[in-house]
Image (tube, rainbow, N blue to C red):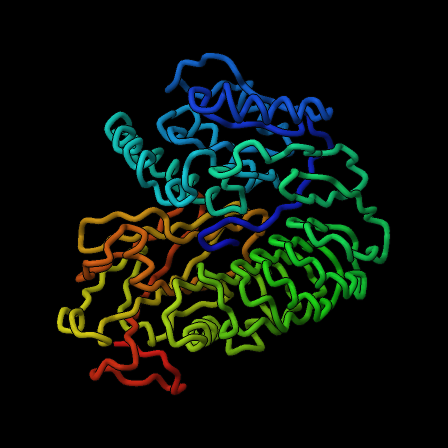
Amino acid sequence: MASIGTQASLTSYFPPQWIYDVFISFRGEDTRNNFTSHLYTNLAHRGIDVYMDDRDLVRGKTIEVSLWKAIEESRFSVIVFSRYYASSPWCLDELAKIVQCMKEMGHTVLPIFYDVDPSEVAEQKGNYEKAFIDHEENFSENLEKVQSWKDCLTTVANLSGWDLRSRKHELFDGASFGRDWDCRTIFINSSFGWVRIAVNPTDKVLPSLSGLCSLEVLDLCACNLGEGAVPEDIGCLSSLRCLDLSRNNFVSLPKSLNQLSRLEILALEDCRMLESLAEVPSKVQTVNLNGCRRLKKVPDPIKLSSLKRSEFNCLNCWELYKHNGQDSMGLTMLKRYLQGSSNPRPGFGIVVPGHEILGWFNHQSEGSSISVEVLSKYLDCDGSGPMGFAACVAFSAYNESSSLFCHFKANGRENYPSLMCISCNSIQVLSDHLWLFYLSFDYLKELKEWQHESFSNIELSFHSYDRVKVKNCGVSLLYSPSSESSAANSSGSRLWKR
């Protein structure tokens, strides 16, 4: 985020020349003779330069320099997650390199889930969990490497991708990753695959977008779009899931943007003239506003209705900080999210400039970890148990490609995957920031299939492999209004804490 949990925002850095259009990462024993060969053939027949390492490699050896270089020299990586992908240390090393290139070079990553549930990859369940039991034994002297593999799986599995369990041979039938680098490319995905439309970045106004009702991914990053250049009929893109308008020069966006009912990801990174974003579609999951330095207004999260976690990423948005309560802004946004529904929603996160954790987070700890007891007298009565917890982390980053991960342990024994994370991508973070998020206990139980078990203790720890310093962190347990021992917060909302 900056992405919380999911690094789903589209990137826009383009090296002066690519050697390959697509790098395919796959486990040969699972897919070499079926899906991956079909994918390679279709791409190659359309003149697309594909790097697919098809040799019988000795697994477990250090990734070769030539293969490492091939990833760096590819514009896209397609990762074919199969049932036993995680059992291969070679594949996981490959994955880690791809994620590094995504963060540092703007490498575009497209995950495909073949014969495996995306949640199994993201949360390391099933065969992926079994694979990591072996890895932790085989790499017992380098558990940090094993954890980094897990983090990379979670990061990529939360990107927009394709679950092919019911349509294994449809994707990319007619794909095009064209190489006209003087034009930006719109990718259209349908059941017949991908087609490409070129958009000249020197045009001051986009052509009409009507008729593109099958469009799922629209990348207009760095297209020199000024005020009024985005047409009102953008709202007709009824299938659009990802919209990248980063690094453009408009001051505002068409109101019809709110009509994109299927939009999940909205990237507006480094839109330095943007002053206001009044509304976004209710089901959006990620809004990336990093580097929007003139931004003064963001959407009210009370209107969000996604059944998945939602996040607002506002690194370096200092005008937003000045005009919205400074250090209290993140907490205000968090409270508004929780007021939006009588039923607890899975989670919400926001990263904003800030220095101090407010006293509302009544459990606080210096450093990068905190443990909180969940009072047992509230656990068993209907309607009185905690619905979840809110957390706040004060941090500073000293690297353009910094990442910060949150790890969660419940009842002293259950380790979850990296539930949420911040990635600064190419953003140089200026000064201190606050990362706030809420997670419901029902959502956490579903991750580990704990529907019939309660939480007695929760522990959060934050770590980074880059130059990120966590100053302190805080937690507040949240209870439903029916809890007799709860007291309403100062705003009189449905948010209750203890």
